[in-house]
Image 1 (cartoon, one colour):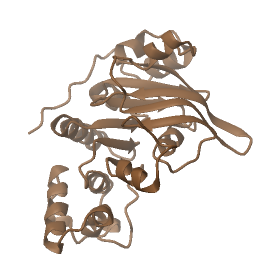
Image 2: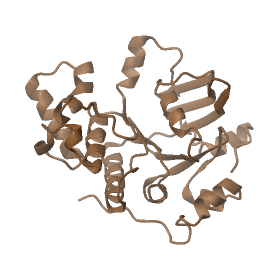
Image 3: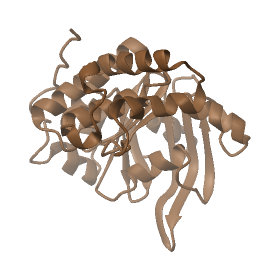
Length: 277
């Protein structure tokens, strides 16, 4: 399971299927000053899958996500999204790619001075020229997709619960009908019931909309219940990628500790995500 860097192991670790991955990360190095956080990282994300990206606290999981979407610079390597080299695009081409993905940051990252309606309309106004009526209808439609309704439209982020904030942020991530959704710790800060409901929501949206989901998470329940594959970041490298059965079968010490530790669910069987209503 460990990725030793050879072509065969690279293909195995990244779940090669003969299809071009929707996201390709090759030999990526990211650092801050003298500290290297990502050390020649390779990773593929296949179209239509939910990939759970795990690692220890401070390992660099969110750093890789932010590097893929262009918020952090890399020192070496290449990143392709939709088979497009992100280093070789013009500003207009990058905007076209960015319109095809949505992002939910860890704490929602809603604009505190804007209402829920205005937050949802923000990315739409940036890319589309719609009438006020259509903008309002689109915002309500996206809220309904995540289990909310028009009653929250005029609320400010400070008036929302943690769960509502996550749902509004997810609705905003879906505003432009993306093909890829990046989720950074989507269930952090939620109680077990709220986290389970959010997992079910993600699974339902992924299935009905055909999304590809790149999910940075620590949540073992999420990994068991909604992830098709899991990739593991350890000491700056992706050391393994595969389904839950492969994670549980690995002899790597960190994987053994993570997936068979006191808070694991290794001996309790997989969870079943509730069917969409």
